[in-house]
Length: 164
Ligand code: FES
Image (tube, rainbow, N blue to C red; front, side, top):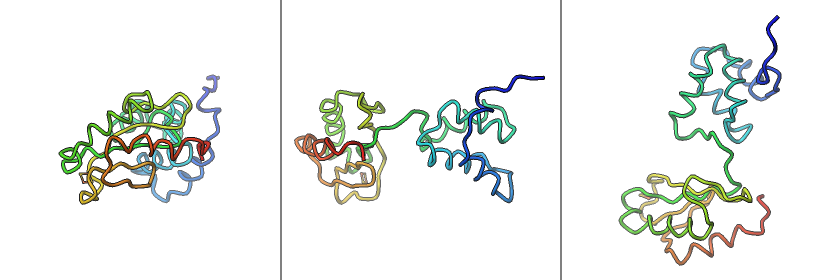
């Protein structure tokens, strides 16, 4: 008898519940990955393997979809996701310098998470608030007309909040 693999033993009840509730299992992969990310924060290798097992598809297919769409995270993100808009309006108003300032202030490069797990720095394209350019988002909060010298103040706002 084949040995049960780790991902088959792992329990991801949210994935089970969601998948089992789908009336039509065709095209379930992307919705299931969305649900898994929402429930577990990111798509770990174990989660991807579990989804592959659950849907009866190759793990390579799950990995291919998970890496194709930028909205899927394969690594754990910080409690505060700092995203600097690099869309045209923000870019011409110096958002690249703001991004550099966040990297300096937090001591990590873009796409990376600080060691304390608090901040992940990234970039986004136009969020539709070009009138406020340059724009920074921390989770869902929008900061407009940000200057590099505002960066420390924004970071300080979140420090000490204990990763709420
Ligand atoms: S380009 Fe940054 S909000 Fe539109």
